[in-house]
Structure formats: C-alpha cells, structure tokens
Amino acid sequence: MSGRRGHDEEVQIVFTSSPPIPKDDWLTALEDTARKLELALRPFRTLGKILAGSLACFFGCRFTYSVLFLRAFARSGWPTFRSISQELRTRYRAAEAVLDRACPDGLPSWEQAEETARQTVTRIQGVQEAFDNLQNRGDAESAERFADELGALERIMEPARAAGQVISSIVEEMQPDRLLGGVFF
Image (cartoon, rainbow, N blue to C red; front, side):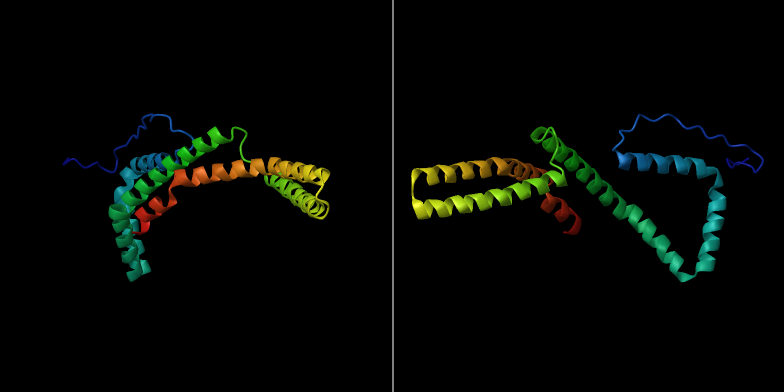
C-alpha cells in the first residue's frame, strides 16, 4: 500500500484525556470539541469531500461563496474573534473580581432597588416639608427636623451611591472603548 488505508481496514480513534476545562472557559471547550470532532470524522474525509461536492452541484453558485467566506474567516476572522473573545473573558473576570471585592453580598435585587426608590421619594417629600417649615418658621426645631430628614435621605442613598461606584469600577475595568476600538478600527 502507498500509505492510504483500504476500505476493509478498521480505524480506531483514541481520545486522549485533556486537562480539565474550567466551567466558564467556553472558548477552549469549543475548540476542544471541534478538535475531537475533526479526529472522529478524519476516516470519513473522502466521503465528506464527495458530500461537499454534491452540495456544491445542487446548490449552485452561492455555495462556492459560502466556502470562500468560511475559508477566509478561518484565516483572518477566527484569530481576531478568538483574541477578542479571550480579551473579553479576561476583562469579564477582572470585573467580576471588582464586584466580589466591592460587594461581597452582590448587587441589590430589582425589588430592593424599587423599595429603596419608594423610600427615597418619601424621604424627599419629608425633606421638602421640613425645608418649607424651616423657611416659614426659622426655629431650631424646624432646622433639627430638616437635618434629620437629610441624614435619613443620605442613609437611604448610601447603598445606591456604593452600587453606582461599583458599576463605574466595573465599566472602567471592562474598558469598552478600547475593546470596541480593536474590533471596528
């Protein structure tokens, strides 16, 4: 034989155990799966070429453009896509670390945010009333009530301020301008 396998030879595929993949490392998992699929389909390469040729015949001129696109993407698009995906994954993990450091309990839920908004509106109305009393009366009791209402409003707004700082830190860590600049420019 000249290095080619005959039709009656049995091909045995052995999958080697690869190192464990972290559960959020989807890009590496996708590449490993594609590699294993390629190994599994290798004995059927000739059949695949026949099938691809038949599809090209039956689907006319547009099929060749698809093949050209896929080959061009594999040469130029995939490396860019892969590097940007890895960069995005790295930035996501950094942003996740910022969130874990800043808010060990996590960000508030939507229900908590709605409740805080309701309390804030109520407190703002109380501040408005206290301010009106302070302007009309000008006595020490009105000034004390106004200061109390402002203090309560600040205490309610503190978690929102902290969440805003965390979100700002996350956006800063993600660097969306730099990431998008690498894709579109």
